[in-house]
Image (cartoon, rainbow, N blue to C red; front, top):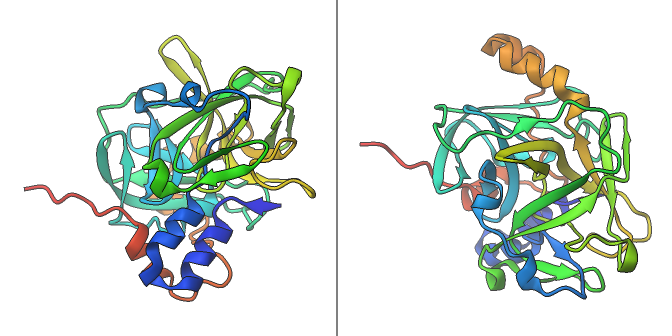
Length: 293
């Protein structure tokens, strides 16, 4: 089982802060596309999913689900701390607090976390949380920025070359069991017209549907779970945290007091093994909040 963020951030720490560009290239490998469809068909803008949040300069995403709340994957929040900032659309928004699911363990299920914003946002309109248990067979979209590649090669174009361009891709929910939903990167006749999967640097990003002007969040990008397939290869099994299974925890957290939230969540940062100076790493990849006059 491959965490989409862990190896790349570990490499960041291993090579040293001075080689920031190396870490950027290693981490940001998100949407991987079909080899037989032109890349231009996958290009996206923020308007394709307005509630998209980006946690770091080098990738990782989340979704605005309430004016003051972003949901993401727990394994992405190692540098999300009070006073730092995340990007939502063209806004840099200050973080007030971070709460991870109390039952999450690195590489396992319950890979979900909430980020409380310092102030509620007027725009964009938040995505809605999908409550149904009938996810299997539904066609959803992924979206992310960073590097790219195709199902034959896996990720090949680095973040610097891609310059943060957004891409979106389709997939169909293959399984919905317990706390997770999963997808297969199909090819040929089995593939959707814009078939694709997420990859490194896209952790925490959405699996969503659009109905009219409403966006529904079904899943949160967690990890690849294939013994013989690498991230982004045809046939890889992509695992997303199942939003409907975590609605009770999410709704309870929204309604709780700050003290209660601490009791209902984990404060663990889930720093990847091998990273000794996480604060130095965070100083390089975090956005800087904009000070108001």
